[in-house]
Length: 461
Image 1 (cartoon, helix red, strand yellow):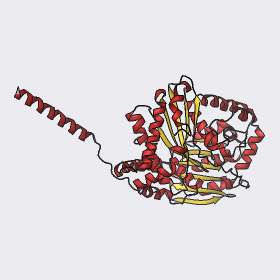
Image 2 (tube, helix red, strand yellow):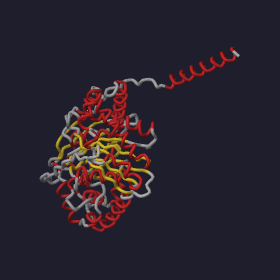
Image 3 (cartoon, rainbow, N blue to C red):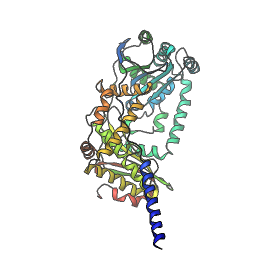
């Protein structure tokens, strides 16, 4: 009996030892520190009648990316004319005074690329890609589209119908509904506060209003041309020629928008929904603030990465959700921190409890140095990947100009980010991420979630 017990004990010890060895083997080795990041050299000049230009030689692939960025976008749309900027951009793509939409697409394809127009909250962007050998001709084609749009009235109603169809689809998506409700509270009735344009407002837009909006914003001093990739030195001459006839004008005013810090709980009923969609956030500072990089680190640690605390809690440990994510959503005038999550309906209240608990935990005590270092390494890797493409370089150059950041922002980012300490993370959390000031939006089945979220109504805590 003793021998059997001894053999059994040895087997248990051996099995435990093997599990311990296996666990030790499963631990990934600590990654090496990311290499320093050096941005490409840039050349800046003013072309034609006042167009700022930035050129950045970059990469090994013989292609170029070109963006003409015009200050404007949704924030400058007049009240009651929701979607005016977007509709203008769509109509621009329908041709110029000398080329049809089909001819533009064919010419862009023959140059090894494409041409597009996009509108966001702060900018209207005319973007082109081409082979390096075709860069000058793409500049010419892009300038023609930007400076000589035809605005064919025959296409206006079709484009409106397309936009109205998109709005109808968006109104069925809980994430869009939550984002609309959240932004309405934080920003009010303006371009930043609108995720979904009003159908009646969009339908009322006339061709004359589109042309007037274009004339106000498409002037050289209200735009910036960016070119990245491999291109010959004579590209400057092509830019000067293409934009030489652009008439001057006075820069249009941009509305000053104040974000509201407001503790409120908004419930949007979605009967029978198997999930509740959450949007929880508050206004914060923008990239021009010295606190912004520490806030980026804090966001990544709290909810902005797969390794974050909120993700680990409500996804990995509790299984309430599949893909929670927090983000710093910035625009020219304001920024907000917001956590998004689709959670199982019966765990709506518990999810709010855990999210706020993680916020309060970080407000009380900074993270261990090892946890912080892992987050910083992750941020560095993403930063390098994001800025290792032609489009990535243009995106960060646009950010520098939009927020009036110093020219060395790109190269100084990683050292400043790695210098963030646990005590700074705690201080930033305490300063900016106060649950008592959060706007909370829940899109879900009211009958099932109303009682769960009642403890989070303002004045109940």
